[in-house]
Image (cartoon, rainbow, N blue to C red; front, side, top):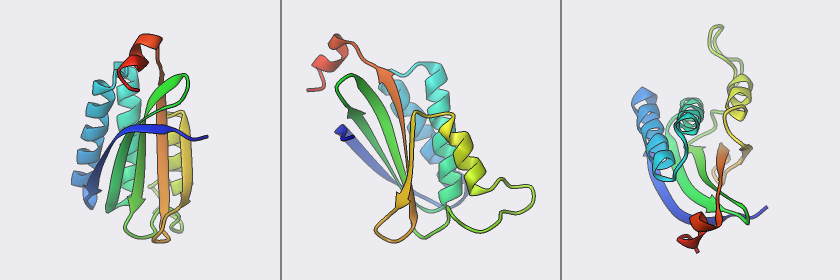
Length: 139
């Protein structure tokens, strides 16, 4: 299904916890600005930070997208190199599949696909319902 992006924001995803924190804060801020309720703001921020931690250094792209009946926040995280499908994780760390399974419960759509550089790109999307009044300013 095609979605119409209304704005885009692209930022670097730096290595380590600092990068995770920056992307998490941006996700929460955008979710609040787009009218998501506090619970959804938390779910979006948590999902984005978990995927950012998994991806490592790269890029985070945020888009406000719409279709016929919904508006949502989309985030695509692309690592600089392949990391998402690495081999077994250390004993106490969850595997990439476990992380993505947990993320899937927090968002409405989750897509994992190869990027142009051969790394695994992860896109997550959270929708909010819109009323006719909400969409008047977006067209």
